[in-house]
Image (tube, rainbow, N blue to C red; front, top):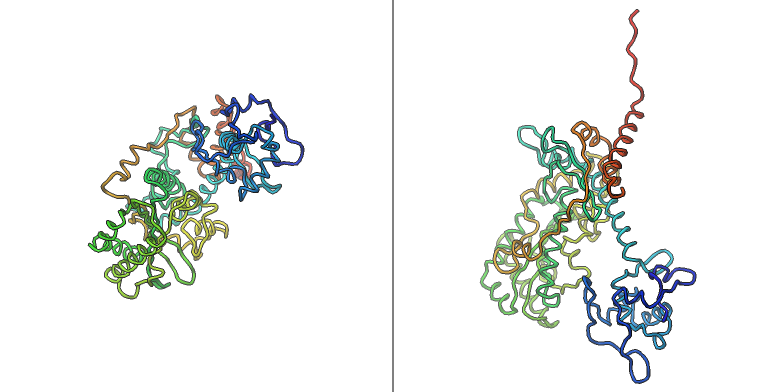
Length: 493
């Protein structure tokens, strides 16, 4: 039996490498697969035994596992990789198990290639460093906007301007920490914890996405719907008025007896709702709600259409009561109920990792707050530009908004989900220490924080302090070279 060694050369030009069958045994593969009377592998229709720590692999997942669009192309790809399946004990279900443990298929400029799990981890780490560096650039450029949008008390710095900049305690210094997973962080500095912060916001949205995903998995994807509720708006409307109006309309909707009876009829309850805001030059701010609804059974298409129509009628009435007839949406666009699928519902909900990524925020009919940040930075970060005014308005008007609203009672409150799925905080592996004067000099260097964290993550175990010290010295010497030698005082005549 021929099995590709490490599967690293699959799909690449040249002959693939092969390994002994013991490779599969070490990876968790069973010695052989049950065969039919004609000697060919039996077609698997039931779920296979899940690998330790891996999601359950099914035979119908083969096209996705091998990077193919259909089962026919998947059969051709497997035959090319592992030899004819009819003459090889490596069957389709076993191939899915092997792929799930060793890596995944990915699109490259040279075509589909297999990416080992270790290589994918390295690529993910480099991608994370790039995102962090860009977030630091955005945060540094937006510090003047923070003081304007959310000023501190008695002329002090804004909490968002202090984030990642001001030390907790004078004389205590700052630590660069590296955990057991190789991720670096800076300890001993302030953190604002606001969702509009370029560094804190993505982290909070990512945690919300983890809890939402956990709740949906517990209830079931097929019994989860997403309701998108919108209102009519124009360019002249202020963001704060639209935000307060749509929140009041949704609260009014949930208080209506007719809406409660509608949810009871389908066994539904609102799990979580997210307030998302985008902007278009033609229509101004577009504030809308995404709500996940749990139902007691999978609805047919006719039931879903009827549920959508009744919800839309009641939403129109609530909008009129809360905001006035001018903001009343049409029946077709007021509410849209869709089924939740694993691939994209978190992104549509507005809390997925792609949404929180300031470097590649999602692009749709309007620009999100994160996309405006990215565009503003790419265009030179002019504090007097139109995008800068939009950022200031968003930070100021969304300051008191609850972007993610969780249920207050039941089994799916944020507190209970957090208890059932606690946040994983890796233990510290090692750390490096910086004095107050060194930190004050480092934070003034553009991308100085990112350079120190990158050096700490790439350092060998036991050499983090040395790597941080060398990087810090190099950055400070570079600043001194750019400043030039000190000027000599003029001699007295």
